[in-house]
Length: 462
Image 1 (cartoon, rainbow, N blue to C red):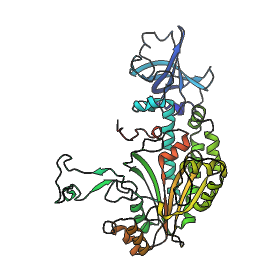
Image 2: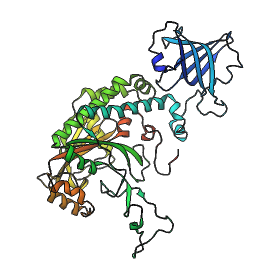
Image 3: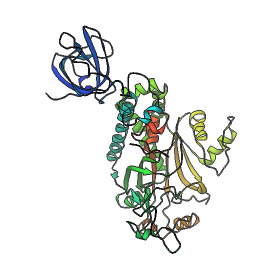
Image 4: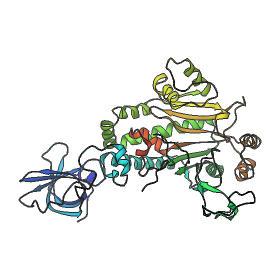
């Protein structure tokens, strides 16, 4: 008989049909007459109850049916006599596929801290919390591809290994095959990367944006969605060394078009989560964040407020609230400032534009005032910045001048400059940190809890 998943069984009308379910035991309880076994296969946060009539089974036969064990259950699907589910399985045969010693299996029926679960990241997907998070992660990944496909974008795979630093920040992981103890050296005594695998210094990508721009100059509208890496020594609840980025790039888009796309995209994703992950969201709302569902609805139901960086700074300077970090024109806004604008001043999502050029990247288009660039940041409640983007500088001379000001070598970036030499057009794009999105959608408080195997300073386990 073919196995039926738990989520399908729970939606199936009970008519006494024979069914086969396979999964892991969450709980077992009972008495000398009947044993109740909760089985979950990961297809839903909800368990299906298996009822074992003890006239058909023995205590010895069910001895290995313990929390964490995997089982195969053949039985009859009937209406449930208990609360919480409409159907249950009257067991005819139960086979233990894999045992889990109750003395050593760490996920017994009790509360576990998120910190403890990070130490056993290879087992935490079996918990209700991480099952819910990973199902939502899948749904959001699918929704991202679905949105862009329906809107005529092409999915581009940009390189993981690259010789460029898209952000100009220098916080990169080096990729090398040179002997780490005794590498070949130049006359100056530095490692000679001409002897390396690629014949030059290379690193793991911090962004697919620059390569994405190249493709947008031919295909008009593209997006990348892949892993990115930052060698930033940040032990915070908002930073990872390895994370996923969604980066659309669009030819013929100016800043206003970029903002329109970002707003529509985010609303679509949040609405998709509400429509397709109701049970998982309800669980996370009840267990971790009582305001989660309200906050998600808040984003869907409110137009985003748009204002310039200068207007935002004026609001923050006049605010009666005390901030840890001082606000003045020319400084980058901190999360506390961004959240004040969203949660207290406007009480809606915010898009800030036209930032000072000195705090933004070289590729952003310079405004006529020569002081600001056509940047945009989308700010969300509870998160702060969730999207960062800009209209890109399409003028060759201005781009070269900005690169010189920021000490970015023209020779190594000649391929990028060619997109401005040959058929340049106005174009824009943005980056959405996938894990930042998941923090917002799940209500989890730490970014290490929305990715299966988190990578951060001093931690690369599993």
